Amino acid sequence: MLTALSLENIALIERLELTFEAGFTVLTGETGAGKSILLDALDALLGGAQGSQGARLLRNGCERGRIEASFQLSPPVRAWLESQELEVEDELLLSRDWRLQDERLSSRHRLNGIVVSRAQVLDLRPLLLDLTVQGQTQQLARPGQQRRWLDRFAGEDQLPLLEAVRTAHRQWRSLAAELAAALADRDRLQRERQQQEQLLEDLEAAGLDDPFEAQQLQIEQDRLAHGVRLQEGVTTLLGRLVEGAEAAPSALDHLAACEQELQQMENLDASVAALRERCTDGLVALQDLARELDRYGTCLESDPERLAELQERLAQLRALERRHGQDLAALIGQRDQLRQSLAPGSAEASVAALQQREQLAVQQRDRRCKVLSQARRAAAAALETRLMAALRPMGLANVRFAVAIEAAEPGEEGADAVQFRFSANPGQPLAPLAEVASGGEMSRFLLALKTCLAAADPHVTLLFDEIDSGVSGRISGAMAELLQRLAQQRQVFCVTHQPLVAAAADHHFRVSKAVEGGITQTRVSQLRDTGERQAELVELAGGDSGEAHSYAASLLDKRVA
Image (cartoon, rainbow, N blue to C red; front, side, top):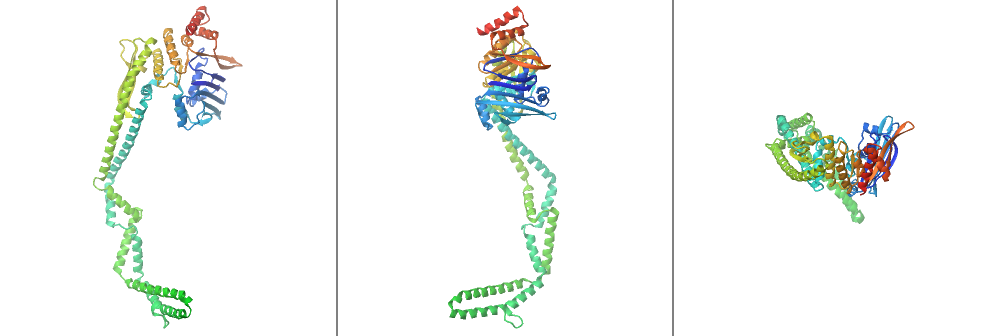
């Protein structure tokens, strides 16, 4: 429930603070006084009035403006606040500030003092207010709007069905995109197949197996290319280690002599044993070194043919790496990938598997769309009955109304195209509502529709801007009764020019315009006593005459009775 509204520097209002109560509230006043400003302000507060509309809303000559409203919390609003991880307080305080600086207008939304985005406010909006304004025929023509109204009428039971359809559609769309990519890859591969096959042939002919082959071949080539010098080094080392040089003992002879001397010393002093063991270990290691050098030397044979083979293989591998800009490991990986992708039927098998999964997703999507469509048809039948029952007392005794549901391209909202069809006169065929309904008929229809939808949103405040425009006194009386009944379960606001509607209200505000100091300002005052209300009803009834006074008094008497 809307409990308070505060405006500062908005349109013709310098400063205004209002409080509201439950029930049925009307706003009246002369044309142009600014009655709709309050509804425009609430619309702006809840995410409307963007761009130039916001600039027009700011009071002329002012650089700052502010709208603030407080609401009692309903269970859906509490749940929304928790889902947004926002603090839940005793009431919800929503504000919007405008600032004009360097000819640039900016605005900011706050919720209980916390800055929130416009997207969050728009998400919260349908949980707080439902605004119905004149000219809402355009809204009827918006794609999907009539379907959304039907789903809203169906209530919470429809939500799981809608969510199931959305989930199934998204899963199908994801698989369809994956399939499209696979088909594109297959087609691309077919176009490039000859080039890919040639590449695979080159890589297969190269006989690549070891990513380190080039390094190993380089080592072997270096050994063959420097075999003579390496053999000289082996001879020199073996001479010093084993044979000795220039009649001098070899390193092994010296070490053997050292071991013998240490053995004799050990016989005299047992503590020398550790030194003798180290000398023995050294002698054994040096003997092993000599044997390894001898074996290495036997491998250093000159082999010009083998050297030529190595150089040719190295040249082939390096040419492959340069041509493709990859090392051997990457080339081996590319060859293995080509083997798989060019294998007979591999791409077709992948596409076939995806096609099967996509078809299963289509079937799941269509099944869930069918269940939702059946639920919509049941809701449509109930809406037809409820709407005609609400329309007939408002001067539409011969009205006919039908909800046409036709198959449409499946989407996240199902596979139904919903259209409201209407006929107000006998012999007139059912036709799209937006095309055949007059202004007065559209006003009555929207009031009846919002009344039917109210059951699905018991916590939302309803606001009507001259919904009774273009109707006669008798019909406005029926509309007043409907608004009264509606207000027994929820808070209802209505801007009106009809005395019958104004008299039916629980609370009455008068909007007036005055010029002070050459500046036009809008004032809003609550009419609290019967005399004030009767005077305003007299104005609505056509002027200060005896008949008008009697008429206004009788309307208020009927309400009290």
